[in-house]
Length: 167
Image (cartoon, rainbow, N blue to C red):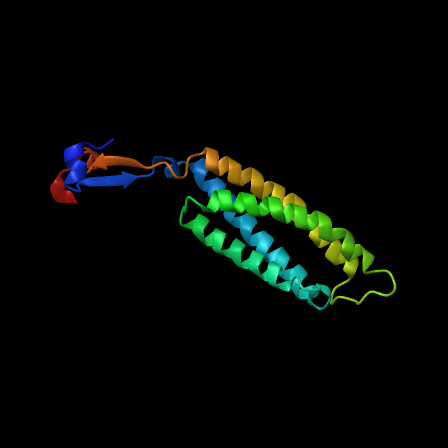
């Protein structure tokens, strides 16, 4: 922790010691990849089923936009990206469990036909479930790894043995 005199003079540097670990970097990469894969899968489902979504288009587009934003924020080590992604993953699991049987119903007579086979859209919707479970696992793991841990050090302490003239 920085001394009061160094903090009052503004001569501190904030470091994030946990972000340098390889396991933390790979967790972040997994979270970003899962967010992007989820957004891509939702985009495919939305585009292929656009004509039969019955008002859910705005929700789907909002979810896709949020997942892309969260991927960007996770790339920048944002503290809020992990809990937000985890919470949204839980909701998406619920939506996918409820929506998947509806796609399989579209194969029966009397339903409008989506651009892709309705059974395929049902399977793609079901694929969102394990994808979101993995996202939830990795966001919890990332949260436990302490992405948000900040350590204030006086500037001289952060330079170590190097001379101030070298900076």
